[in-house]
Each structure stands twice: as structure tokens, then as C-alpha cells.
Image (cartoon, rainbow, N blue to C red; front, side, top):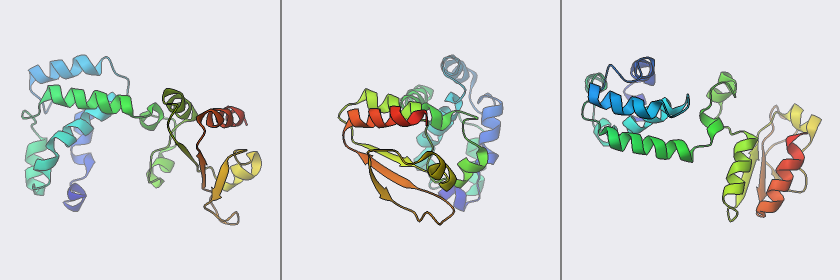
Length: 190
């Protein structure tokens, strides 16, 4: 919110970062280490590097003015690249792949939503990885899809909408992980 308040929008720094893969803001020895890691990641990994840089600079940025931001974002030699890469890898591994994958969701939908969307394959992977987890699934299909394909069967459903409204939001809470996997499997193909 601080950067937004300064009207220091990501377009001012993020586009050059990603177009040049950070070469115009980092020293050569840091670029070599960073690129070794970038080559091992997928297409979304540079986003996590950018987020890691912002995270590392967070405390400084909170006290900066617009002009300070312009200066610091044009040259980033003070970044601890080892710490940056470790944090980026940690966040990359903890983030569902479909939230950062390009082209899976329409851009207009991503701009309108307040939280990331995840693909059903990520839900299945998450549930299988930790059997003790309580699962909450938010089904935010349009009303037409719910009417056409139906609700997820056998789950406790709390309606968060009026079917006469223009959109549909269901919150499904399933405490039994085995039942959740069964529900997902039965509804993926519908």
C-alpha cells in the first residue's frame, strides 16, 4: 500500500526487471548466481525472484519517497542474492503451480479477483501431500455453470449467494480428506 500511495506502480520497476532478467539492476557476479537458479525454474520463477527482492527491501521501502524508490530500484547491488534465491525457492515450492502459471486463467478474471485461483490438480496434490489438513474449497464458478453442471455432491455447503444474482460463490468445507479426494474425483470430469 505504501508504494501504491506514492503512485510507484510495478510498471515502473517490474517490467525492466523481467525484460532484462535483472541484468540492468544487479552486479555481474550476482547475475551469474541468479541465472544459474533461473535456468532450473519454470517460466514463473522470475516472478518469485522479484517478490523476493521486494521482500528483502521491505523495511527500507516503507520509509522511502517516490524519488528514493526511483533511485534504489535503478540499482540493486545491496541485495543479498543468496538470501533472495533461497526465499524465492521457498515461496515457489509453497505456491500452487496454477496460481503463477501464465495463460491458465483469463487476464480480466485475474484482475477482478481478490485471491488467486488454483487448478483442481493443485487441490488434489495438496490434499494428498498432507492427510491431516482440513480442506476448504471455494467454488466460484459462474451461476450458469453451477446450474448446468450442479454443485459438488455430498459436501456440506453454505450458500454465499442468491441464485437470482449474477454470480455464484459456494464455500464447501470437507473435514475428511479421503472424502474430499472422492468428491474431487467424482466432480473433475463433470
